[in-house]
Amino acid sequence: MLVDRPQIELRLSGVASDMRAVKVGAEQSLRVGVIGVGVMGYNHARVFAGLPGVELVGVADPDPRQRDLVKHVLACPIVDRFEALIDLGVNAVTIAAPTHLHHEIALKCISQGIHVLVEKPIASSVEEGRDIIAAARHAGATLMVGHVERFNPAVRAIKQAIENEDILSIAITRVGPFPPRMSNVGVVIDLAVHDIDLIRWFTDSEIVEVQPQLSSAVAEREDIALLQFRTASGVLAHINTNWLTPFKARTVHVATRGKYVMGDLLTRQVTECFGFQPDGSYSMRHLSVGHDEPLRAELTAFVSAVRHGKTPAVTGEEGVESLGIAIRCLEGRVPAGRTQRKSPRVVAG
Image (cartoon, rainbow, N blue to C red; front, side, top):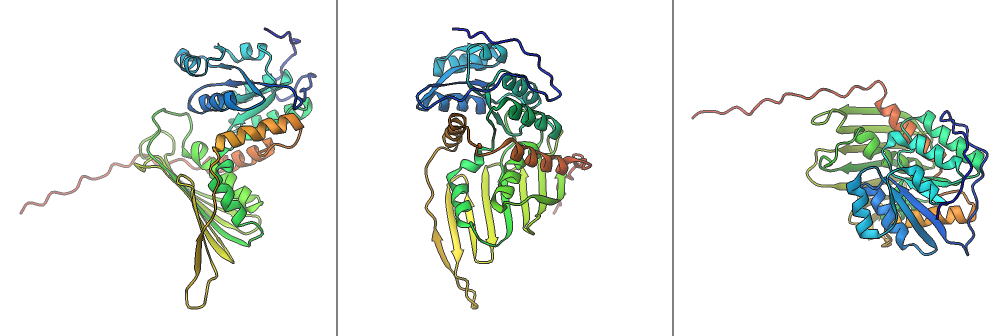
């Protein structure tokens, strides 16, 4: 059944409407929708469909192939425009559309009193991200940014292991093959923004120095990035990311004054080295790591924030800060052109 909603002027410069977001009590079913059902959006819809106390009202995507896939697998209403999804009467939505559309869609949803989870990055620019934050604050709407890696059980085990430690350095590797779908962003926005967020979260400190090295070997945008950072607390951090490695690797190494923690985010194995002795010996142990699906944990946290009106696990402000650091890595740094590599010499003999 369609729900009548007042027609409210939307100003894309950042001012929201007078409609206030409605708190949904524990006894009520939370009506959710997903805007954009590519790989990530499809998984949001799949998880929402299985969460208790949540009703997947529908999904929106202009691509008929994606709509057909969701229709056959999840059997929920499918529409081609996000405005039609709003008309179905959703309380909350995930926005998993292309990044350049986040600003328009988020402001429109918030203007209708809808709570929003925006997939990372929050927007195409810091200014657009701040518009979204201001609109959500004005409407009293929950705004959460989808940095799903925070909900990886291995990441959480690392975070717990370094709690109250004097962190010295962080090294993160996030590499893999070239993505099958071409994107309008390079590895910094697509991949490294995950780890920029983790560095800020692990250290509880802002990044104050950025030293990026970028290159374009295959893609038009950067497909190799070596990024170095210093936080306000003095931690040195390094991110190695590319689309040139034939296999996926996701690792985090954290050195503190008292221990060294190594985590594999794919196998979810976390190891802690401690008890360093003058002769170079030390102790080692494997830490307990949970088995929760990261996306399910993320969406459960979003639903809880909506129901209880509490601060979401990843705020809009945090999303904007991480985006701002990623953009700083790109500003004024033109990726090196594709290098013509010499063929190996053939020696007769």
